[in-house]
Length: 150
Image 1: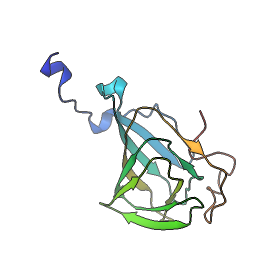
Image 2: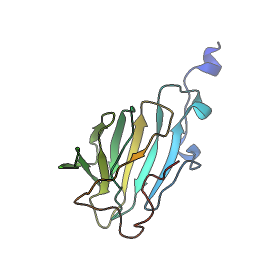
Image 3: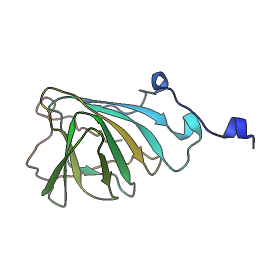
Image 4: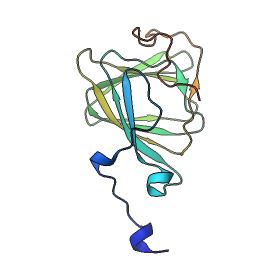
């Protein structure tokens, strides 16, 4: 093992990989993946959620997820019936435990919400749930899930 070749990796802002699953109303870009850096226990990237975009209810299986809000305002709903809600703004962290049903919402009507996302694994686990929610998925694309099924 060579410290130079197998040590610290820097992924520059202009080197993020948009070749990752995309969803209407948001843009994802991968920074830290096994293929790009050799990471084996986590995934990191960015997400931009356009104004008025909302997800359908879902969870990420056994993965833990952390979001760091860079710009805008994120509203999170969570719980077995998405009965809990709280908002996070610039500089705030959001932690989503394994198997917790949740929904992400851009809380601002005229500004994108930009976040850094880190997950505890490489697999893109998304389990879409058939739950009623007080904030239905984006009206602009009602038949297109925020997290597409694989």
